[in-house]
Image (cartoon, rainbow, N blue to C red; front, side, top):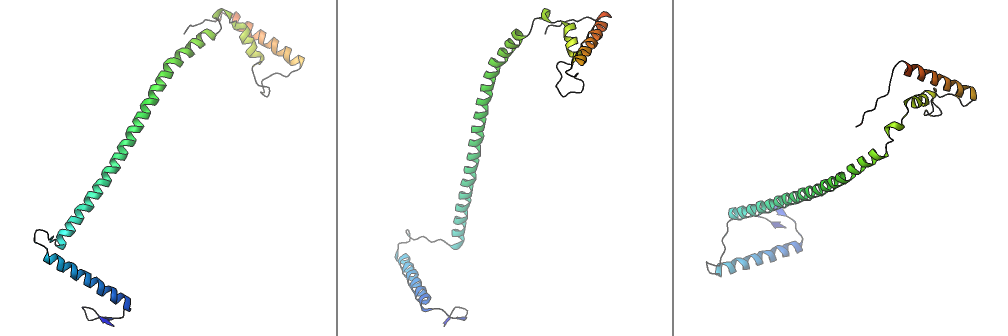
Length: 172
């Protein structure tokens, strides 16, 4: 049994008692060495000063971590800005080359205005040639339905154009 400073008895094993005695002896030897050292070499720091120093070191470490994070964020933003800049420059180059090329292709691949026959195109639309096969307005594939659709388209086109309607073209 061992009594501590408050006269509380507690049971300890012999190894922990031996370790406590060894630690006590080391601390005593260190204190004696410090006492023998000249006053200029001695470092006398009080517990409050030690706490202040530890607090300053902790604050410094925290500030360094925050600064490191800010540097990482700044570097990431810089890389993103450079990548966006490269992307916009390359798209601008593509647009300056592709848009004029597409316009050139569109202008020269369109049919000439005088090659367009309005009556012929109206008849083709009214006959239902461009409708899908399953569309309900598309005439059947038999001879009678096809002939009736042609006659109906011709009559409708002639009536529409005989009343004075005309086709005009606008160049863009």
